[in-house]
Length: 169
Image 1 (tube, one colour):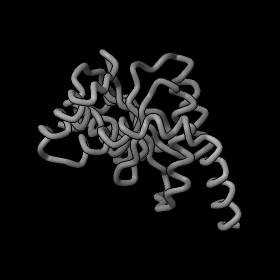
Image 2 (cartoon, one colour; image 1 turned 90 degrees about the horizontal axis):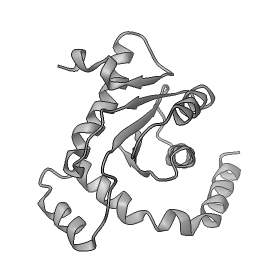
Image 3 (cartoon, helix red, strand yellow; image 1 turned 45 degrees about the vertical axis):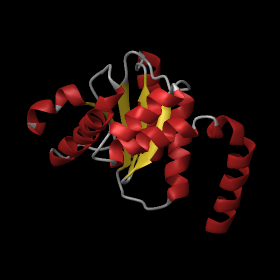
Image 4 (tube, helix red, strand yellow; image 1 turned 90 degrees about the vertical axis):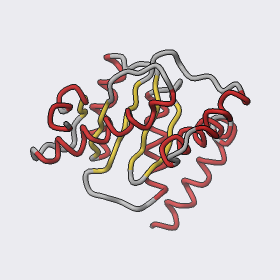
């Protein structure tokens, strides 16, 4: 069964190769913004390549309630987030699946609530921001909403950082 799942995932990925591949520069930049301490090279690359991000952004981060190391399952979750936010840019980082989005509409929030129920994940939403150099800070906000909620025994919900920022201090 795991082999069959892997084969099906690979077939699905190949079918959607071009739509996934065109966003790889964004994915790489987002990963570098999270992983590197010195942002100068990454910000220079963004400027040289003329990579454009929305004027206003939020980070939506998902993490499985029961931890999993299976990259295929995480990538499938990333694809589902991309379906909810077609204008977003996703990144996998340290057990989290995140997507940078321009906004979260009520319809998208409803879709996130459905995803939470079907996939057994917790989802955190950061405050809005305008400078891509602040991506790591807002990723941490969305991840912190998940962590702080777990401290109160809350999981498997869509969580706004606004509800947990006081505990994050």
